[in-house]
Figure 1: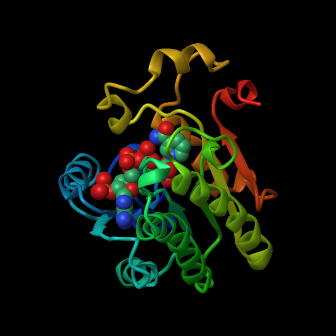
Figure 2 (figure 1 turned 60 degrees about the vertical axis):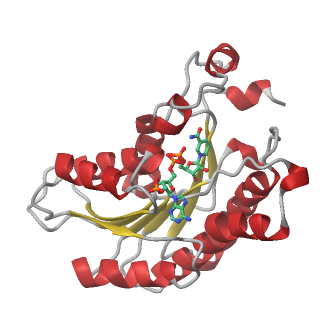
Length: 249
Ligand SMILES: NC(=O)c1ccc[n+]([C@@H]2O[C@H](COP(=O)([O-])OP(=O)(O)OC[C@H]3O[C@@H](n4cnc5c(N)ncnc54)[C@H](OP(=O)(O)O)[C@@H]3O)[C@@H](O)[C@H]2O)c1
């Protein structure tokens, strides 16, 4: 869609520096959104993405953010307002993907996962919904909210909590704001590509659609859930897994 410059919707994307978040930034930039995005440790990836998409920094700003810090979500909303004067959408992709074995998971490491993956979502959606311009949000849950895997108790619990949070917040902020989540299955990201133990071949065999998701597949679904074509959908956790979960039940 072509819009006059500086009139596109303003969208805050957390975890925009890599994987699914980076694909969301790419997709929404192409769709004409003005973007406020965050990174945590990989500022160089955020800089490379900005150089690629928006070398003049007119419609894409990247800021460092540690979402384990409960002061950060409200601050990000304020930063987006200062930069663009309004906030229309949030896509919350950031998460810590913790695979510590249960025996070695401490109370504080469990809490850190919950703070980063769940408390941040609660605080971010609430602060964003305080803005009268907010229209829709998407959080990224996972099929790990429903199906267990090895060594990811805190991560799985955090994704299950995020899915329920989506429903609760959607009911609270309807009809003004639509709040939905995506639950990806196996996605081919920089992280999985760099992991020699990632069971790609086994997954490909088990996924009915015959391939892993690309980050762009997930970003395309996020774009639909943000936009007017899903105007009657709220409080849903949409599984985007090529049918993988059909084989896990
Ligand atoms: N990949 C999959 O197969 C899959 C499947 C289901 C669900 N998901 C979900 O999809 C989302 C994105 O996953 P991904 O695979 O794209 O992961 P990723 O490539 O590892 O990206 C994670 C993002 O979160 C940021 N982040 C990590 N810790 C943070 C913190 N404490 N504060 C703020 N930001 C933080 C990272 O920033 P830096 O890189 O700058 O540190 C990065 O931008 C996550 O919610 C994940 O649970 C992924």
